[in-house]
Image (spheres, rainbow over the protein chains, first blue to last red):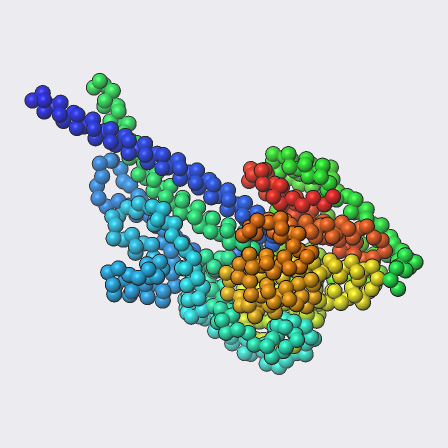
Length: 286
Length: 351
């Protein structure tokens, strides 16, 4: 009997020690993430200052009033019970894709159990982690994936579809206004705009098909403004300095680090609570 | 006649040349920048600037002060000086000074049109426009839906009218169109400004020819650098380069096909005037390029003041003052972000 009690207390001690070590590891991870977030924010703000140095004032006057979030943070509460008291939440990123792309990604995922790399890269992060448990444990691999392909795909996809009925209506009204007021010409002087190079008028009016198609995409995407990495950057111009692009990617990475930090904090609190509760019990016992 | 400006220049323009040289002597020195670099807060920067030419503009600013406020007040100083000189200039100098401001006018037009595309309030956009680029009908830019309307309704009565071509389209104004419009207008403006300076002749033509050639080469370089990774095609990129400058035409051909910074570097290094700039950069490093180009521009502007009896001093004064404002902005940003170690990355000393 005494031996059994001794064995169970040894087991309890081992479990408590393991919990304590885990909580310390989580705490270290939290501190490292904090330091990383600080560096990312510092670098992002410095890149923003460099962009202002190159291109002049950058401010809220250039924001799109019709902006839509390209990234949302979703909160999920834990489904399974845990050894800790209290509820736990997980935070995950949801990236908004145009409907056609999302449909294509979902269809591709349904067709094969292991979707091709392109579809995986373009799929919603939520879909990718849905197979896991209810809490999203955001690792560096999950969150810090390369968004470049997605954004390029978005900027090309936007030219092929409208983003809502309101946008279609606005576009239709704009065209009607143009048709009603655009007949008859005013004489204009020589120069460069609209026709491009003045030396060759025919080549000046003709522009590459690629640029024309992307202009239509730019028109549709410019109204929405929330299509991903390329969309918000275009609020400040198409030819922006590299520093502004660096700032954007830096702040995107900082956002993901924030979520990792929040998830780690959620993991850490019950671990620390149970460790300190176990230490309090041990105190009187010894 | 070249070399004989000293006989006639001071009759009409001597007073204003003296005024602009007075303003030039009020530009911040290395000692001023060292004092600013020691500041711990933006209020310290404000206090240090009150003992300079900016004193009257910053003295009454309430705390807390922000970088944008400091830049706005410093810009106001430049605008007031410029308007004072412009109001007293005779016809030729007045035209020259107007040419100096057309770049700001183009930027204001693009700001209003882009802001309207993004459904911003027009009054808010007008507050953000550069004061030197304002014109009477600027607020009506918001009603234009395409390039043709933009020209017919508003810009036909502005100095930018000659820079529009005969082939205006009904295409809607979107971000790409607006960017191409900006750069094409700027190209036509620089071509026109250069030809005006050549018509003036003499020292003005010589000095301004050099300054504008550098400006157009710098724009070509920035367009190339900023269009890497975008959808702007090579043909469209080449159409945005001006028709003069040290890079015209062979350098432009090489820049048009460049796809990364090292290809740009190899194109620029073929021009002896720019090989010295790029030799200071490491391979693949483009971050310091802006500062090096501004240093080159400042050197040319300071050299402008070595000669008398020409209009280049007015252009140089504007550029030097703008660089000074950029310096103050950079120092303010570094102080506000507690990154004073990075101050030296952006300051270009004028003297």
